[in-house]
Length: 289
Image 1 (cartoon, one colour):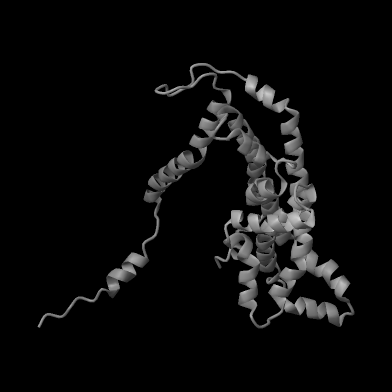
Image 2 (cartoon, rainbow, N blue to C red):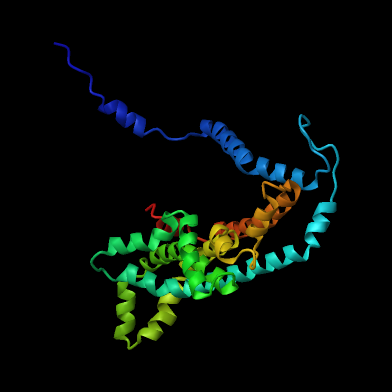
């Protein structure tokens, strides 16, 4: 009777495969091609649309170019007002989110309690449920409270979307603070305000930075909740972009310019995040480790 071959050695060999120096070139080519298709090509097409003065199929490139649209859009008072609204609202939302998230994240990180998993799911609910569903429900409440069509209402509804991620990242940062450090501070006579000021906040800076950057970008680019609660009285850049993409009067060149203005802060923030933030903190905040 012939014995069946043991598949274990083959499985172990497959698991032990690693990239070698010979694999660097094809991996690099695949990576750069993916980046080109996902980022560079769409950006290039947007830029061409923004300066095109006539671009019809089957031509691969515009027939003529102009910078007049950039000058017109940048001189538009409505666009400037929308940009200022977006920046101011994003800053206020970021600081308010951090203030609200810190005590909640501390409780989630340091205190075991029953139904903790249920509370975590409840905290993440606003980003699990589609934004338009959340926006419609909150919009009805804000309309009854008199907060609809106001900057305060847009700020509050955006906090609903940015708070879950901030709590998640802050919880991951606060979980790394050693209990012995806090006990030592208490044994030396430090009270709760002193522990928070001299231990908790300095050690929570990476989480605050990560959550703050993500909250700023999320608020700056948020559309559905801001549109339902604030438009047309409160205009932000995403709402302005939607106006240019109206199917009855689509203006792709102008929409491309606004898209560039929306993309610039996000690129700056993510470059800063890549240089100053720890990868393990972001991964822990996203629930990957």
